[in-house]
Length: 480
Ligand code: ATR
Image 1 (spheres, rainbow, N blue to C red):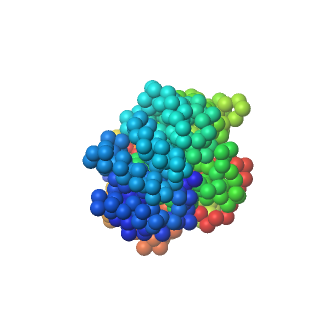
Image 2 (image 1 turned 90 degrees about the vertical axis):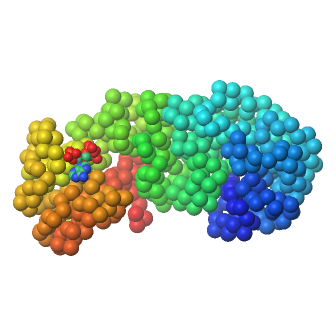
Image 3 (image 1 turned 180 degrees about the vertical axis):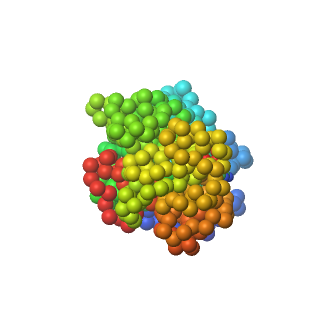
């Protein structure tokens, strides 16, 4: 079940949120601690305005809620919620409220007994869950906050140990616990929570629409095949959208999840426990992953960087689809053999990846960098020519100009690394930045009549190639 947590201060606000997301959700949670106090005098009205079964939750401040008043008042209001016909009432795992518990029993209102920890995974978490599950009419709920790969692994192992508790909700908050929100069915949780706004009800909540369209939450079952992306940071990666859209089109019981990682070896244990079939690798792990691979394709070997890992019976196989991703948009526009000379702006890690790709085509590579000494070292390492960034006459001799610095990237969108450079229309301008979709560098090139390629096209091309490696099928026509 997908449960929408309502955190409005007024009933109108909650009604509007429900209206917006009604088609994506199965259950509601009313956070009484968010509602204006005077509204709590009429619990029947709060319940009657809800079009779906609902959980009544009145969370105290030290459990991550907003309520700071007396326990007596809180329990009174929760009791009224049970009277009013809420399907579930959420109370703390150790709350002693026998009258409330008895009333819930009589009213056939299920009790969710929750435990919260906002700093890591407590060692006694299993005991708490087991004890809570043994109480009558009780669904244990644990919301804990993993902060590292090791803690994500610890949480996953606990969840797996709890497999024989049929009704439970065990969720990880924050980025490292995000997988529990997407894979809740696979991990045996009764429901997953979401909010009208990101992080609205708790850290890690996304909107019902994102759950549906970015993660196919309505399609994936307990036996879903899991893929994902590792990196740090990684939560804003666009890859889940691309991959999950492809899975949806083929109607596959497969899901792609972002996994923030602080330790590759802990993540690999995690991947084994979760039976992850493959994953994309992004900054800063494209090199770190190399020693863990039992096989590498020639591009991974040549570039010394891997962005795609397949989990096979023999171990981890490394692939590099960045090269294809870079070349594919060029191929689509021109014959690669017509690119006799290429200018690469920048001499950092991104420039290195671009140069590796350019080596596959027969083009003379010239690197232009602000810091000339860095350009010289780079040139020596890769066997290319180098110049200072203001050598515009040299740039003008190139057929292709590839921009690899972060200059012009959102939020600082007004900048270009080559201010005042006049493009000539025979040149192709390629910027690896994808936010914004058209940088000043590309806009100036387009205004001069050049063909342009943005970073999004490159990102999509490398992702589609990964999709093929993961599924063995071509990326479907989705308009992506
Ligand atoms: P990445 O992995 O994204 O390439 P990097 O290895 O830190 O990051 O490299 C950043 C590149 O962007 C460098 O070439 C850097 O130039 P310097 O070597 O002179 O630092 C370039 N860069 C960053 N900010 C720049 C700016 N404001 N103007 C010009 N070049 C810039």
